[in-house]
Structures are given as C-alpha cells and as structure tokens.
Amino acid sequence: MNHFDVAAGILCDSSGRVLIAERLGGGPFHGLWEFPGGKIDVHESALEALYRELAEELGIEVTACTSFMNLRHEYDDRIVTIEFFLVSAWRSDPMGREGQALRWVRKEKLDAEELLPADLPVVSALQQIDN
Image (cartoon, rainbow, N blue to C red):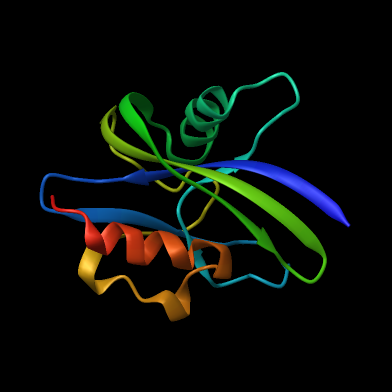
C-alpha cells in the first residue's frame, strides 16, 4: 500500500474563520473539501513542504505558523501521515491558483461531511480551541 507524508495548513483569520479548498481531479475525493497542502518531498521538512505547497496552491507566503497536530489515516488504497500547521500570518490574499474553489468558514460551522475523512479529527480539535 502506498504511504504519503503530507503537510497541510489551517489558515486562521482574525474573525475565527479557517480556509478550506475544494479537491480537484478525478480521484475518489473529487468535490470534497480539505485544508490546503500536499505531499512532502524526500528532501523537505514538513515546514518546507508547507511553505512550498501554500505558495503553489494559494499564492501566499507564510510568515507565521505553529505545528498543530499530526495524524495517520488509512484509506482503502493508501496511508497518509499528515502534519497540520496553524497558519496565523501570510503575505498576499489566498487564491485558488490551480482552479480550486476556496471558502472561509467559521470553525464552528466546519461540516465534517464535506471534508476529507483524514481531516475529521482536525475539525473537532479546532472547535476546541479559542480564537
């Protein structure tokens, strides 16, 4: 079974909202939403991958973030280990540079049904922290 290491960013604005991105492509998760990020390359740390992925996907430069949680999720065809970072400051306005839709959602309004299964523990953890 394939195993992937992934870095994902949870962009948090001053209003207590987080950014989610729509999944593109023809895979099994097409149309679901996720916290933006992507695979960690062999030569990268999770933090380096986060900076690169958010620059590529959203056109932003991360200027402040902290590690939030690590989780491992087994899908039918792959295993992913994801390191999530809370991103509290960045340069430029996030935009879907790969054609993906973006939405700002209040933490308490995050709907687990529309997010990737691997992101579900993050939703409950986010809803436990104060702004």
